[in-house]
Length: 308
Figure 1 (tube, rainbow, N blue to C red):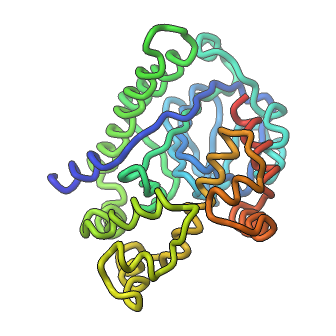
Figure 2 (figure 1 turned 90 degrees about the vertical axis):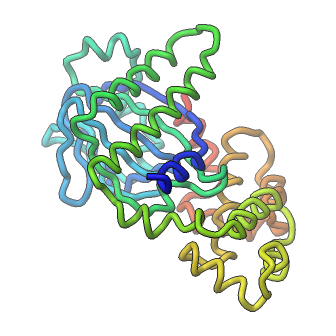
């Protein structure tokens, strides 16, 4: 139990966005993938996911860890449209109609509440993504469903302390999510084998150094000095504890930082590339498209649509 308490204490949580939707037109997204963790509470209608199109029952919650691909179906009509993730994002309003939480509780049509949040270990490592757990259904958990509904309600008011309330509710939501995983003995092997960043403080030093120096020199020579190991060994050491080599991890962190800048600033793509460590804009754009499947400019437009 002490180990898992340490895990929970180390996970920093941030509320990102929430919406209520009527499913305007049934649709299947063949390669659905969001960059952030997503919880979908099904109020009415049909929601399916995965290769086998497992059915989510009304009142249940589908958890989609960030960066995990799955096949996702909204609505149960046999005439549903099949689209790619890009097509869905470009035409989201065609399939999902935003409504208030008050209206969703009285609706008889297919409707959902969606909450997106960030969860990072020591504000560096994407927690659920690093565990390599798949999408799964949260069943028989009224507490999590209630927290999602409380977040949806809070979003629609202008009360004092709204941002703090959203943050506090999201903190409790993630704790309850982890409790649900442990109580139902889900993914315990993944928790024990992949949460290796708690086992060596030097790795945390590396994570923090990389995060604060994304625009600078992050060669193995520099990383070796931070971890106090030899340059020849640092790559092996990092991969032994994380499962990936340090330069791949660094590129992932740089690209994630670039996505955040695209979301939250009006900086040019050239300036964003430089800020996250790419002097060559063309190379940055090639690597960005290779990692995310879309150009940086299109990613910025997509994110603006998501936040409407």
